[in-house]
Length: 266
Ligand SMILES: [Zn+2]
Image (cartoon, rainbow, N blue to C red):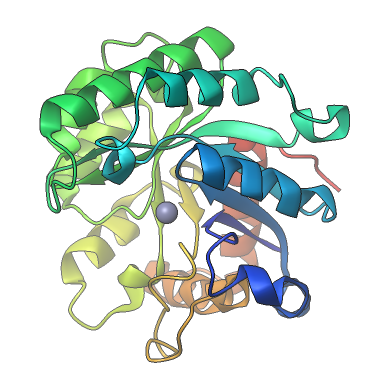
């Protein structure tokens, strides 16, 4: 059994085909999926979508790309949802974390001070509520690590999603107590840097994700959109890379995800 720990099922490429996408995931052994929302409207859409599907959990927050468009009201709305206010009682416990939040210095879609303000507001919230955090960091890992260290108890419950930096950065992230999560990027031919990290990270500190609809793994890289069923290719690649059996890698990464997000076992 595998868990796709990061997937944008509300995307227009996936949401209209939800039933076949989930059936394909199930057939491929991907039995749980963590849906990630990137702003308030997306979070509300995702709540509607997870309602009918008990295998789905939800992480919600304001993505750094959204920081320019977002104001205090958006942060307040995210806060309410994370507190379970206005959320149907059966769905409250399916909101399992804050994310994806962080800093993106590659695209810089929002001014950096603005990104940082929105990031910090959500870290404070995660700290107060004791929730896991899903980080988006692009060319900003060092700054993100510096900020995380200011929020006691948060780093130990944080994952760097789609980790794509080098071993030195990975070491710093692991030393803080965070986990790393790998997407299909690790399967790409020129991904030697992240492959070196994926060989090096301890087995109890890593998770798997598709980041669908983006980043289809090899050998399906040209197949778009990516979807949770394709997680198996990333899992197989990582098992080969680390010299372990696929079953063992699946069991370890699934246990890590269950523990990290406090997902129901079964
Ligand atoms: Zn994402």
